[in-house]
Length: 152
Image 1 (tube, rainbow, N blue to C red):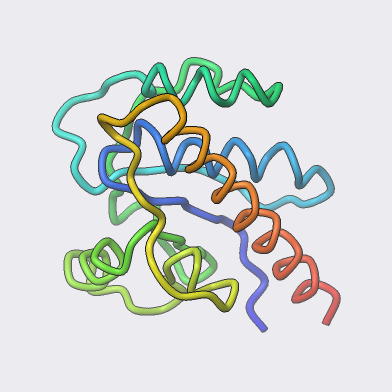
Image 2 (image 1 turned 90 degrees about the vertical axis):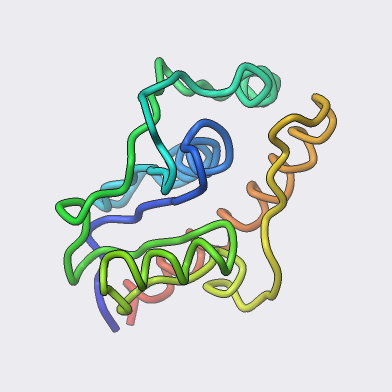
């Protein structure tokens, strides 16, 4: 098994799902030296995280801490990088744009599930809360899986 040195959570604009996933991951995993970041596939200009995402995280005692969106770049990726996308389409885009097929999964695929993480963008605060709940469950499973693999 590969020992990952970096995990990149990727969504479309890097203002909601991927920064929430990275924040949740960092709140759960304190014993690892894995670097955790989030990136977007369509980041035309840097912008702060979505206020609804921030509100939901704060309600769970988590903070994004001045997050600014960043695009995924080739320099972010190496053979020890695990890339977890929110959708199958994002996964395929990364494989095509970066000609990189190793260690790219949807977050659901990585933990043995199917489907996409729905984008709450433009939705209600409840939509963002539902997204958080789903991400929290998936990220916990991700942390468990990575910890199991490190034990092997």
